Image 1 (cartoon, helix red, strand yellow):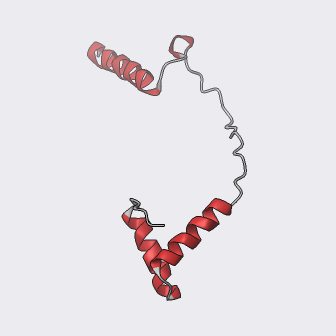
Image 2: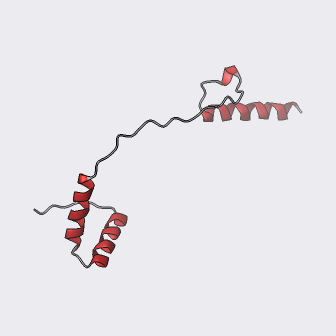
Image 3: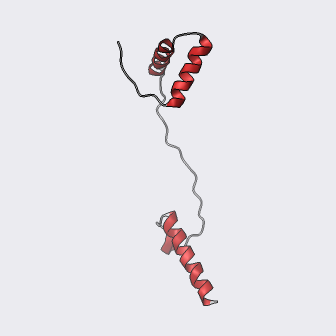
Length: 84
């Protein structure tokens, strides 16, 4: 069966390279690669646990995004410089 696919340049280059090195038609290498991918069993992904550490952030700043926290620290530093 004929069909048209959009494949990234990098993937197409890798498939062409594999076809060239094995002296097989590109069609055969693509079909074989797709069959291997479809037959592969995928393990269900497990959640990743990242340890957290207290960094001593003031209670007023808890729950802020990193950008909001950075903006707050920057504005406090600006006030300190203005006072000097």
